[in-house]
Length: 217
Figure 1 (cartoon, one colour):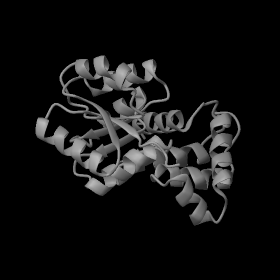
Figure 2 (cartoon, helix red, strand yellow):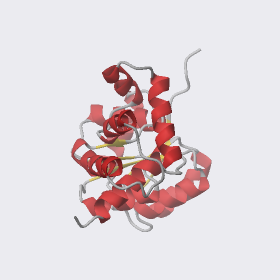
Figure 3 (cartoon, helix red, strand yellow):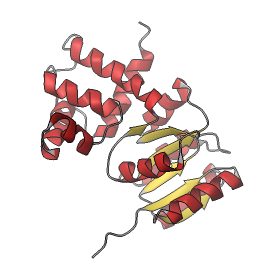
């Protein structure tokens, strides 16, 4: 018995771009359960559409993408938001991740990158355009090297795993690189979350980006 296709909602105020993304997703076997041209439409259609992943532009008519992200996740915490934005500005990335976005791609991403990102986000991974992953990586380094003000220190292996998470690697890729099991990778991430008193990988990434960007050093 084959798995049900991933349910996706596309939110963008540019009709041609929205249609192109919808078409690419459908051709790749995703189930596009809803589209919207602005924040109001997105929030109105989200409850009935019940998408697993919302592919969302940040710069949409009010409420904007950051507000939509927060509202969507308040309504359904199991949903995932993948931002697809023309902006790669740090402030925009920070705002999106603080609101709960699981991934952030710039619109220069290829079709293959977008499809891969939707699959990975649906599976629980965090995904960032490669240049943006450095924001997370910087904070993980500080977390490993800095004073123990966040409780227990991270082990060398936990730090190694988290650096790979920050670079956008999936659990499967990390397991293959380190020649350990997928379950072991999950355990390292869970231990880190416990030490930081956080509840999921998205929250950890959000924390890392926020602290990395707010640091004036």
